[in-house]
Image (cartoon, rainbow, N blue to C red; front, side, top):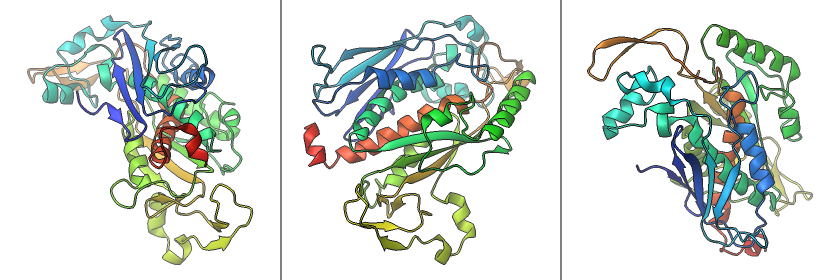
Length: 373
């Protein structure tokens, strides 16, 4: 199946199905000599895994990563060759999906996979499951660790659930510790409590809710991105919209910019001798552009948002059809998230890191030290 790889210089290819033996990723293009951080990868996988709170699926997976290649076991440093990482699937209950061999779940990929391939992995949704994102998060943590050597910091948080919105967040000082202070991963404690109640109410009704995740990438080097088809904004949109359940992407003011005049939306330039990551002593007074102008990073904080729909698996009877087109009724069984957003935070961070790292490396050689000359 095509379409399982992402990136041009830092290339990741994910593999595996939700209820198969394992899921994982192959990373090709990681520079040689980088100190491979198992801890950084494990930390992000633990934030993504199911069963971490009552707001998530109760599927019990340790999500311990095994590195098969690309890292020197004696030095712990990358070799410059493909890095293969795998995570076993342990708590699979495929019998919950037996009836789906003949039925199509509303708003899932069952019907479209059959239409495209004529065959699908029924249990757990196969490649269409969010379980596939294990590989993305592992690779994204590695990419983020590389970017950290240039001072880049990436933090995402849940900004809204249904009609509950977080208040003003200080995007320049927000930490992951503050995000993770609540199970819903919203740093606004008052809004977080309301979000949790909203998710709980939906879960008790056998229903689901969606919302918006916002993300910032601070100290991104000036000049990343290409001016036409490979604009940084375009690649970020591609990355985010490839995540399961996504329905929208905006950067900077996004759709709100349509209600502004140009004089209000423009970001005036001004001198800034203290600026270090840009290296040119120039910055913008405002950041309505979200850190990207003309498809190229301008050295300001990159700010974007991703909209997620309600999870398609609901525990109430729904109309559907079988594979022969006959009317049927389907009621879900099994373990599913009532809201994908708390676990999607590290997924958004991972795809941001993969996009930025890929663009960063496009202008460097395969030797890590060349990135900092």
